[in-house]
Length: 141
Image (cartoon, rainbow, N blue to C red; front, side):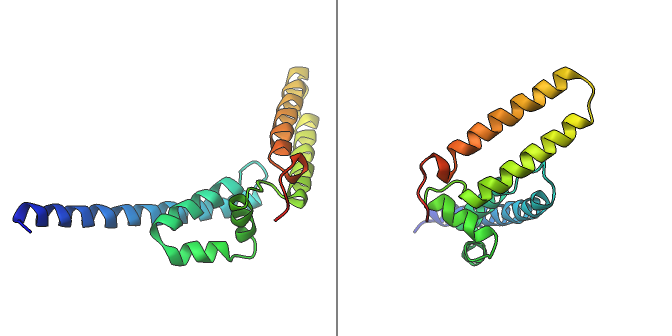
C-alpha cells in the first residue's frame, strides 16, 4: 500500500464517519418531528418515522432496531416494509381527524371559496390516503 492509498483510505473513513454522524443527527431530528407530528394534527408523523428509519438503517443499527421494535413507531415501519402503507384502523383515525379539522376550519371562515378549497383538499387527501390503505387492496400484515 503506497502513501496516496493510505491518505485516500483515511479520507474515506473520515467521510464515512461524517456521513454516519449526519445520518444519526437527521434520524434524531426526524424522531423529534414525528413526536411533534403525533401531537399536532397538521404535521405528519409517518413520513418522519420512515425517514428516521431510513437514516438509522444506514448509520446506527441499535437505533434502527429500537424503532422497529417500538410500540407505536414500529408498526408503521413494519407495515411499510410489508407493503401496507396505512392499516385500516389508522386510516379511520386519519379520516376522522382530517374531516373534523377541515370542518372546524370551515366554521371559522366566511369566504365561500375557502370552504370550497378545504373541501377540495379534503377530497384529494382522502382519495390519496384511501389508495394507500388496506381498503384499496393492500393485504394485512
